[in-house]
Structures are given as C-alpha cells and as structure tokens.
Length: 131
Image (cartoon, rainbow, N blue to C red; front, side, top):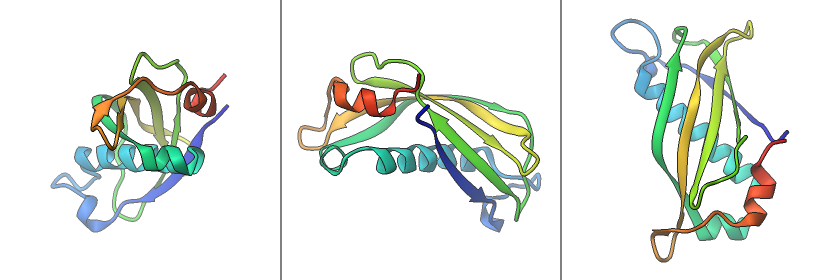
C-alpha cells in the first residue's frame, strides 16, 4: 500500500479562540500532507510538469488538538482517477492513535505550461494507487 506519513505539531498561531487547532489549519495540513506525498513519490519530470489543485474537501472533525501536541498525518489513494481527478484519503491521529480528523479531497492535475487539466498519466496512477 502506497501511504505517506507526516508529523505536524500545533504552533501557537495554529490555535483559535476555542483553544484548539483551527479548522483552516487542518485544511492547510491536508495540503502539506498531500504535497509531501507527491514530492516523495513522483519522478522529478512529473513534479516539474504538473501541479495539483483541490476541487473538493470532505472533512470529519472528531477531536481537538492544542498547542504543542503532535498529529501523525496519513494519506493514500484508493480509487483510480477519473480523467484529471483523483480522490485522496487522509487521517490524522494523536499520540495515542486516536483518529482526530479524517476525510478525502479531490485533486485535479494541471499541466504547468498550458495551465489546463490533463488526464492523470497511467504511470503516475501506478505509483500512487494503493491495492
């Protein structure tokens, strides 16, 4: 299974007026996790040629996190793309393994030069798709 993991620690500016990580920060972390996965797995020529943009987020917030706490983000792709789009799954767990935030995001692949969506190349599908 092609999964990617990333540890993220809540900083003081990540905390909202309720004293926990703001929902917008979780969205930023989803992007950081996805980008780290792309950069770790994709060949350099693909990284230079394509960029990904989010078209949809589906997020379930289950628990809170406060300043100084660390979450382990996990991401994976479990479905074949449809044209230019992939659904990417993610979850964030705390030190005890409790699921705090999970969901999926839909990403579209864009050719950097034309700035237009393109069909996800088959070689990239093979690199990222999990069994």
